[in-house]
Length: 78
Image (cartoon, rainbow, N blue to C red; front, side, top):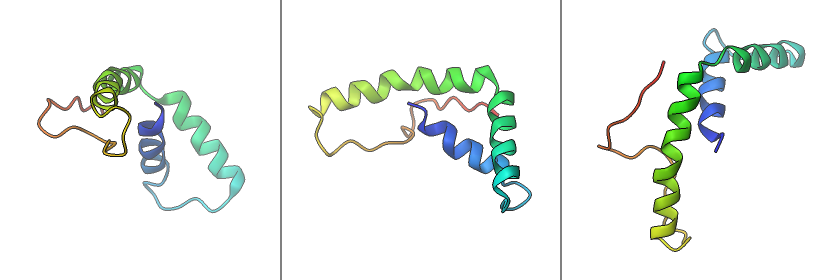
């Protein structure tokens, strides 16, 4: 369940515009990964149980919608 980190890292590394150099891009992503707050990672981990329960409830069907649950006390960590 590392999908939330990709969106966050892309947003964080492109704040000043898109990076066009592969070398700069790799350096930016590594720096971002190393500086990511443990509290942010923990919040993502804590949401996993809700997603697993939803998949079980749907018997693994295609109805599962990824993403945040509206109205379930979002844990925002910046």
